[in-house]
Length: 109
Image 1: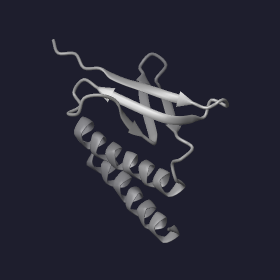
Image 2: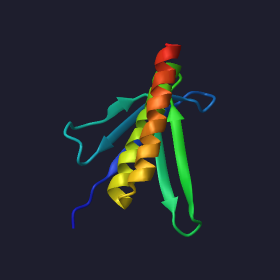
Image 3: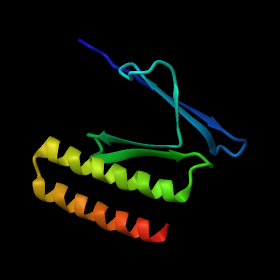
């Protein structure tokens, strides 16, 4: 059985605010840790029937990039819903929301 691992290192300031987010994965093409400005991780707790979330971003991440990051996350969820469940309606609704949000973000930049 193949196993894959994902590792995160978060460097915090004295107030526990992320200053640096590093990640590595066994299946990543490049070796070693790579830097990111934000991470959003969701886990489904099947016993409690709810989602556990970790959302972190560095102090240096600009607000406009954060908005785009969350729009991209939603777009990825739209594709995941379609792939996992075949629910074209739900996927389409999420994509439509992403389009509206992207237009709004572009107007504000």
